Image 1 (tube, rainbow, N blue to C red):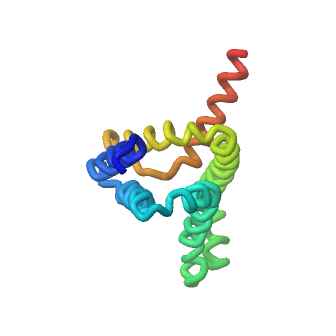
Image 2 (image 1 turned 60 degrees about the vertical axis):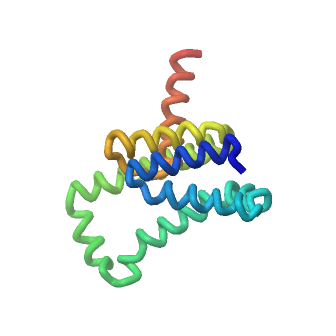
Image 3 (image 1 turned 90 degrees about the horizontal axis):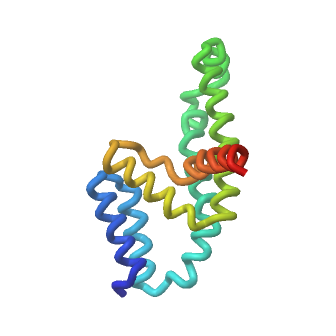
Length: 154
């Protein structure tokens, strides 16, 4: 049971604990639990294939809750677009959504980069009090930088 992947997961758990990152700790706990119960061979490929989609759906549901509760309606939308901050936020939303789309492509084409993205996220959380927003946007930013490097260094 104590193989390289388990040791790696335990190190990630420890870093998550040090960085007070509950998401990393829960993720590691779930993955080790699936390994312990010998469910990893069946579930890991499915989770790897569908997990990002599930995560995006859950985040989308959370973001839309204020609309569902009536906290945000058409009047609030109309009021918000009168502010230049709202237009900056709209532009930023469009920008990160396009970047994330490219990140999804990068993760699908080069899944080994996920490890580097996760490590970067964990290091930022532990040492710089960052917030783990997930590998998708990180992959999108990495994709943009890689394309720029490829452009300038053929």
